Image 1: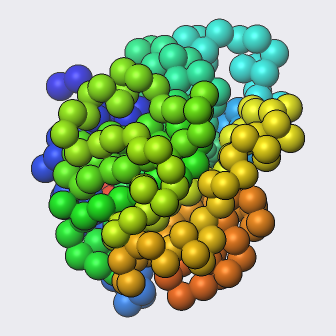
Image 2: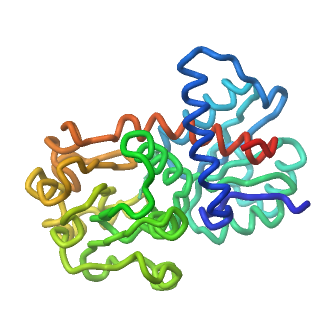
Length: 303
Ligand code: CP
Ligand code: NVA
């Protein structure tokens, strides 16, 4: 059987994704009840990070510890990858030594090349184009708090970035309606948008996106790698902050999510992110449980 990878949500079927969410919720309960479950004893996860991370690194590393396995953190500062060893060679070598690999890098195409040369499963831990692991956690969080996300109205108010692209994929696979508000010049990728026909559209203002929404989502205005654009983006995106006034246009029981790290006073006001509608801490915690379900699925085929 061909090696399965998780480079975007579209690598999995709708059925597999639904099962993963259910399994993530189960694994969370098992951990809360103190149940020991070690399906990945003697298994090793290689973690290649070319960008910074708090949640992704800690959640994957803790997941492997809980599962009885081990994780190795690899940064370009300490590996030959940082000194120019080709990505293909790194993939060939690492995948002969470890059982599964996650990568956080810049170009999505680099991740694809890595996966092509890996004999073990490869997980996208964020590229400039997609962040699918975060979507598993976001959907899990919504399902836990409000039930099925199918048919719900989700508002994306921010840059048309990696998170936005993964929300577009998720809209198709989990069948929710997605309304996107981005400033001109910061729209999501046209091809990704075109892959979702009925239930995803760009609207003209944050207000139109948020009106009657069940879930309001934002992200930083300047992603990793766009640090030089930070000042210009502050101007371009002013008017896109999630404020209590904007949240008031959503349904009264709407949730607020943000993948974090957040900038209070920029993309979201402190009142919203620290307020009663915010689900961000459970969302961050669910990275652990959702990725445990993902690791278990890719390594044991249990789901
Ligand atoms: N949300 C997320 O991926 O966080 P980190 O950058 O801290 O991993
Ligand atoms: N869009 C953000 C997400 C961080 C988790 C970035 O790429 O920096």
